[in-house]
Image (cartoon, rainbow, N blue to C red):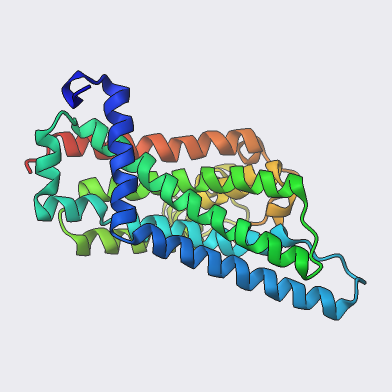
Amino acid sequence: MSQAGLGFFGRLLLFTREDVQDAVRDRQAHVLVGMFALLGAGLAYAAGRTARRTSAQVDIELVSQLLAPVTLLIPLVALGVVAPALVEKRSTGSLTVLLGLPFSRQTVVLGTLLGRSIVIAMSALAALLVAAPIALVMGVSIDGTLFAGSLLAFFVLTITFTAIAVAISVVTKTSTRASFAAFSAYVVFVFQLWTVLPQILLYVVSGFTLPETSPPWVDFVVALNPMTAFTNFAGGLVPAFETIPFHAVPDNPAVYEQPLFAFVILLGWIVGPLCFGYLRFRKTDL
């Protein structure tokens, strides 16, 4: 069947497959899989050395050793790799060629999201799959429930930051701007500079003085950070995520810090930037 005869989902599937194949042809997928695999192997080996030194006095579990490094790396890879993707296609003219085929701009945006999410998610999976046999050989335990839960959590994290990166890619006109925006987003979200924003706003609305106690809306704004929402969500799914250093899950979480509400926030970070980016991209003259 020709591309013209395919429905929307058929064209979306076709574009997604082509995007994944582009990542493979460009060796991007190879580099990402290799990077995550080396990370998993290194952490599994280090955990094994620790397990042997403790002589079984302390139970060392593999996945809990991987959570923080992989959680840190996924947003970095998603923003760094995906943000320039459509910008580069625009500068080389390949995007114009794609849109000359029966691919709409909506298909391009969604297909890029799905294709790059698959590549990054498979790379993160490689870290766990490579680490597992090394851990077993070196006496490190593997919790099956934690393993499965972490895979789901990592997939949600991948889609969230890939969506943000795709939005950056469709609203910027040069690779330099896209890379700068991606780096800024990483610093603000991952290194928790987001928490400074409500404090600044509170300082302004309070007459340029900070009150002794912060109103509840400050904590609510802090919870809107995608990394904070991810920790709140993943901590409910897999308790071991509560130990990662990006955000401390509160002992008595408010409603907006509950896992279900945190998942809704993550959905907002997926849908919101994509819709905004698509609306800008639809009006852009290529």
